[in-house]
Length: 209
Image 1: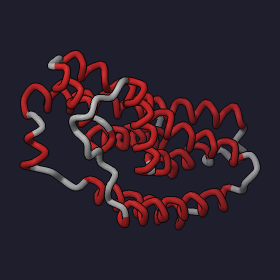
Image 2: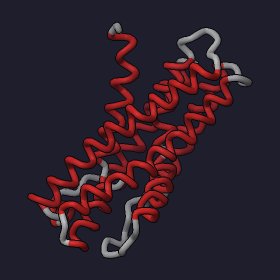
Image 3: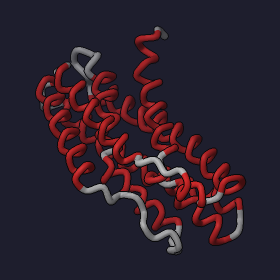
Image 4: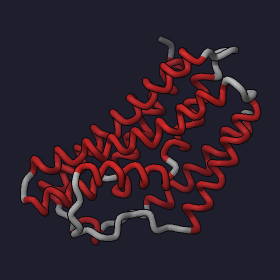
C-alpha cells in the first residue's frame, strides 16, 4: 500500500488519538469512576462504554454519508459537508459548555455510553472525520454501496480504536500519577482547538469540492 493510500487511515487514527486526549470526550469520567469506586480496574472498564458511545455517534454520520453517496453528486455532498462543519464550529464557539460539569455524579455503564454518544455528537466528532472518509469513498469513480459500507465500518473501527487506546492510557496515567488536580493547574481549552480544527476541515472540504 502506497503512502497516499495509507495517509487517510493515518489521519483517521490521528483524529481518534486527539479525541482520546480530549477530556471532554470521556477519560475524565473514567477517572471519576475510578476515584468513586477506589479501583483502578473501574477506570479500565469505564473506557469501553465511552468508546462505544463515540463509535455509535461517528457511525451515524458515516452511514448517512454512505446512503447519500448513492443519490447525491460528490460535488454537492462535499459542499454540504463543508457547510455543516462551519455550522458546527460556529455553534461550538458560541456555546462553549460541552465539558461535563458534575464531577461527583454516579453514572452506570449504559449512562456512560449514552453520555458519550451525545457528547461526541455535540462536538461534531463524526463531522470531523467526514472529509477524510469522503476522500476514501470518492476516490472511486462510482462508489458502490457494499464497498463504501465496508469502508465506513473499517474507518469507524480505526478511528475509535485509536481513541480507546489513547483514552485508556491518559486515564490510567491521570488516575495513577497525576490526579484530577492536574486539570485545575494546567487546563487547556480543547473546545477552542476543536473549533479551529472544524473550521480548517470545513475550508478544506469546501475548496476541494
